[in-house]
Length: 172
Image 1 (tube, rainbow, N blue to C red):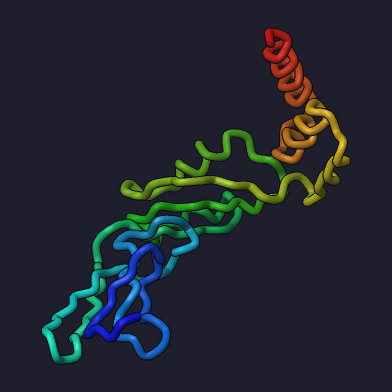
Image 2 (image 1 turned 180 degrees about the vertical axis):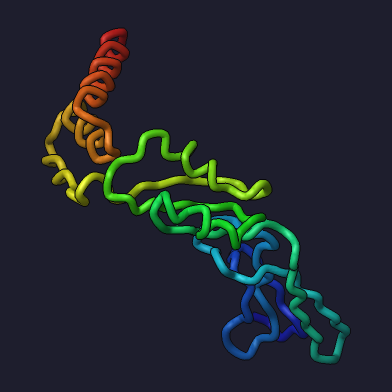
Protein backbone atom coordinates (compact mmCIF):
# COMPACT_ATOMS: atom_id res chain seq x y z
CA UNK A 1 0.00 0.00 0.00
CA UNK A 2 1.19 3.53 -0.62
CA UNK A 3 2.39 5.66 2.28
CA UNK A 4 -0.66 7.45 3.71
CA UNK A 5 -1.35 9.15 7.02
CA UNK A 6 -4.30 6.84 7.66
CA UNK A 7 -5.96 3.91 5.89
CA UNK A 8 -9.55 2.88 6.63
CA UNK A 9 -10.79 -0.61 5.83
CA UNK A 10 -14.20 -2.21 6.12
CA UNK A 11 -15.97 -5.57 6.01
CA UNK A 12 -14.42 -7.15 9.11
CA UNK A 13 -17.01 -6.74 11.87
CA UNK A 14 -14.58 -6.61 14.79
CA UNK A 15 -12.93 -3.19 15.12
CA UNK A 16 -9.15 -3.61 15.11
CA UNK A 17 -5.82 -2.07 14.18
CA UNK A 18 -4.28 -2.91 10.83
CA UNK A 19 -1.36 -5.31 11.11
CA UNK A 20 2.13 -3.98 10.40
CA UNK A 21 3.35 -0.41 10.36
CA UNK A 22 0.54 1.16 8.33
CA UNK A 23 -1.56 3.56 10.41
CA UNK A 24 -5.19 2.56 10.10
CA UNK A 25 -8.04 0.37 11.27
CA UNK A 26 -10.82 -1.92 10.29
CA UNK A 27 -13.67 0.22 11.54
CA UNK A 28 -15.88 -2.75 12.33
CA UNK A 29 -19.63 -2.84 12.47
CA UNK A 30 -21.42 -0.40 14.75
CA UNK A 31 -23.83 -3.07 15.95
CA UNK A 32 -23.29 -6.80 16.46
CA UNK A 33 -24.24 -8.66 13.31
CA UNK A 34 -24.26 -12.26 14.59
CA UNK A 35 -23.55 -14.25 17.74
CA UNK A 36 -19.93 -14.71 16.67
CA UNK A 37 -19.53 -11.08 17.81
CA UNK A 38 -21.03 -11.68 21.24
CA UNK A 39 -19.19 -9.65 23.88
CA UNK A 40 -17.27 -7.45 21.42
CA UNK A 41 -17.20 -3.74 22.15
CA UNK A 42 -18.80 -1.78 19.32
CA UNK A 43 -18.09 1.80 18.44
CA UNK A 44 -16.99 4.35 15.88
CA UNK A 45 -13.54 5.40 14.76
CA UNK A 46 -12.92 9.14 14.71
CA UNK A 47 -9.89 10.19 12.66
CA UNK A 48 -8.28 13.64 12.59
CA UNK A 49 -5.96 13.69 9.56
CA UNK A 50 -4.04 16.46 7.80
CA UNK A 51 -1.40 16.19 5.09
CA UNK A 52 2.14 15.83 6.39
CA UNK A 53 1.34 14.66 9.92
CA UNK A 54 0.35 11.44 11.57
CA UNK A 55 -3.37 10.94 11.91
CA UNK A 56 -4.93 11.01 15.35
CA UNK A 57 -7.24 8.01 15.73
CA UNK A 58 -9.76 7.59 18.51
CA UNK A 59 -12.12 4.67 19.04
CA UNK A 60 -15.35 5.86 20.64
CA UNK A 61 -17.27 3.04 22.29
CA UNK A 62 -21.02 3.03 21.74
CA UNK A 63 -23.11 2.40 24.83
CA UNK A 64 -26.50 2.09 23.14
CA UNK A 65 -28.00 -0.82 21.28
CA UNK A 66 -28.88 -4.35 22.26
CA UNK A 67 -26.09 -6.76 23.07
CA UNK A 68 -26.19 -10.31 21.76
CA UNK A 69 -26.12 -12.71 24.71
CA UNK A 70 -26.22 -16.49 25.00
CA UNK A 71 -27.81 -17.92 28.13
CA UNK A 72 -27.43 -21.62 28.92
CA UNK A 73 -29.21 -23.51 31.69
CA UNK A 74 -32.20 -25.54 32.74
CA UNK A 75 -35.71 -24.22 32.20
CA UNK A 76 -36.10 -23.75 35.97
CA UNK A 77 -32.95 -21.57 36.12
CA UNK A 78 -33.69 -19.40 33.09
CA UNK A 79 -35.45 -16.59 34.94
CA UNK A 80 -32.41 -16.03 37.15
CA UNK A 81 -29.97 -16.45 34.24
CA UNK A 82 -31.80 -14.03 31.92
CA UNK A 83 -32.49 -11.36 34.56
CA UNK A 84 -29.09 -9.62 34.16
CA UNK A 85 -29.80 -9.13 30.43
CA UNK A 86 -33.05 -7.10 30.28
CA UNK A 87 -32.29 -5.34 26.99
CA UNK A 88 -30.45 -8.13 25.17
CA UNK A 89 -31.17 -10.15 22.09
CA UNK A 90 -30.97 -13.63 23.58
CA UNK A 91 -29.96 -17.00 22.25
CA UNK A 92 -31.16 -19.48 24.87
CA UNK A 93 -29.80 -23.00 25.20
CA UNK A 94 -31.90 -25.19 27.48
CA UNK A 95 -29.95 -28.06 29.03
CA UNK A 96 -32.83 -30.17 30.40
CA UNK A 97 -32.31 -33.79 29.36
CA UNK A 98 -36.01 -34.42 28.71
CA UNK A 99 -37.75 -32.83 25.74
CA UNK A 100 -39.79 -29.76 26.69
CA UNK A 101 -43.05 -29.20 24.82
CA UNK A 102 -43.57 -25.65 23.47
CA UNK A 103 -40.02 -24.73 24.46
CA UNK A 104 -39.95 -21.23 22.95
CA UNK A 105 -43.22 -20.30 24.68
CA UNK A 106 -41.92 -21.61 28.01
CA UNK A 107 -38.69 -19.62 27.62
CA UNK A 108 -40.61 -16.42 26.73
CA UNK A 109 -42.37 -16.65 30.12
CA UNK A 110 -39.00 -15.84 31.72
CA UNK A 111 -38.02 -12.93 29.43
CA UNK A 112 -37.60 -9.43 30.76
CA UNK A 113 -40.05 -6.97 29.23
CA UNK A 114 -37.55 -5.41 26.79
CA UNK A 115 -35.54 -8.51 25.93
CA UNK A 116 -35.86 -10.15 22.54
CA UNK A 117 -35.74 -13.89 22.05
CA UNK A 118 -33.72 -14.67 18.93
CA UNK A 119 -33.43 -18.42 19.22
CA UNK A 120 -34.23 -21.22 21.64
CA UNK A 121 -32.33 -24.48 21.36
CA UNK A 122 -32.45 -27.67 23.38
CA UNK A 123 -29.28 -29.36 22.12
CA UNK A 124 -29.43 -32.44 24.33
CA UNK A 125 -32.68 -34.35 24.15
CA UNK A 126 -33.85 -37.28 26.21
CA UNK A 127 -30.94 -39.02 27.89
CA UNK A 128 -28.38 -37.33 25.68
CA UNK A 129 -28.46 -40.12 23.14
CA UNK A 130 -27.92 -39.23 19.55
CA UNK A 131 -29.21 -40.89 16.44
CA UNK A 132 -26.31 -42.21 14.36
CA UNK A 133 -25.86 -40.38 11.06
CA UNK A 134 -27.66 -41.94 8.10
CA UNK A 135 -25.78 -43.84 5.43
CA UNK A 136 -24.49 -41.74 2.53
CA UNK A 137 -26.98 -43.40 0.17
CA UNK A 138 -30.02 -43.01 2.47
CA UNK A 139 -33.29 -42.06 0.79
CA UNK A 140 -35.14 -38.82 1.56
CA UNK A 141 -37.66 -40.49 3.90
CA UNK A 142 -34.83 -42.03 5.96
CA UNK A 143 -33.11 -38.63 6.16
CA UNK A 144 -36.37 -36.92 7.15
CA UNK A 145 -37.03 -39.51 9.88
CA UNK A 146 -33.49 -39.09 11.23
CA UNK A 147 -33.76 -35.29 11.19
CA UNK A 148 -37.15 -35.24 12.95
CA UNK A 149 -36.05 -37.80 15.56
CA UNK A 150 -32.85 -35.84 16.28
CA UNK A 151 -35.01 -32.74 16.88
CA UNK A 152 -36.96 -34.60 19.56
CA UNK A 153 -40.18 -35.54 17.75
CA UNK A 154 -41.84 -38.68 19.04
CA UNK A 155 -42.39 -41.62 16.70
CA UNK A 156 -46.07 -40.75 16.01
CA UNK A 157 -45.10 -37.16 15.09
CA UNK A 158 -42.22 -38.39 12.93
CA UNK A 159 -44.54 -40.70 10.98
CA UNK A 160 -47.14 -37.92 10.60
CA UNK A 161 -44.41 -35.65 9.20
CA UNK A 162 -43.29 -38.39 6.78
CA UNK A 163 -46.90 -38.88 5.62
CA UNK A 164 -47.28 -35.12 5.04
CA UNK A 165 -44.06 -35.04 3.05
CA UNK A 166 -45.10 -38.06 0.97
CA UNK A 167 -48.54 -36.56 0.29
CA UNK A 168 -46.97 -33.27 -0.79
CA UNK A 169 -44.39 -34.98 -3.01
CA UNK A 170 -47.00 -37.21 -4.71
CA UNK A 171 -48.38 -34.09 -6.41
CA UNK A 172 -45.09 -33.52 -8.29
